Length: 361
Image (cartoon, rainbow, N blue to C red; front, top):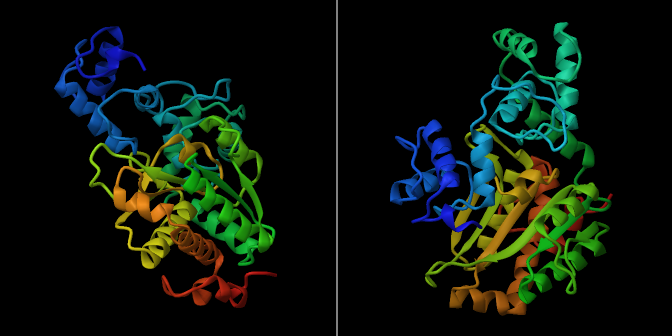
């Protein structure tokens, strides 16, 4: 991380950052000095984009700032390498999805699914079919948008896929992404064992001997064809009084999108853990972290307490506590795939009950 992108820094890159922030109406004017006003604007931006709120412009914040400056129509969008990223891409994806064209997740990345959706749209309105979103395609989209609106095609597709997969866990693919903490890794292995015993195909993104980068772990998840990805961690904070469990899923208020299945599982996991343990409920939150955004499957990240809090650390160090969390996650996973009429109240199901609820085909 370059030192000129923190409080007190200066230089051309700071000027570029403040230019972005000014265009987003978060600053009144550009500056080459990284002062308190700039730090405050950075925090506001990070908060609005579901990033970690630090007031420091790290590589991820700088990338998202660059993406945020693009509006639909500013440039011609097409499939190139590396992929085009930006708010204009997210706006295109969102509008295509609303009109029933499947471009996959609204993630602001112009990939092959987005190109295919653009081509399908171009076919439907009679403009040149080249997969490029230029002025003619945007104008056609604006005209059609006036008469086609409403509905929730993404939600309907997610619900249909989940229904087709059925309630049985046997045959499903679940990726577990644990941190390197010995306790969390042990918890992941316990969960892996329970799932394998029930016929689930399980992939761990780490081993005791290996520690792949986040991008590599995302690739492991994407190449596995996972039905669900569960990332397990412990949080840290400078103040040891911070404590409790929180669960995160992909969502962007600025783009008006979120992972339907991810939010559903985050809710279930958070509720089941809190119902079975005395961890403080720090609720669920939509974030745009790369692990959540770039993983194709529904993904949640669970911060199981704070390693910097003595009480939380003691809980997680207890093998019986970890067994309780495993049971909570097992029940949450099954509840994700149960129909509403077969579901049960939070905290009431046990692993022994799941076979009667359609665990196996």
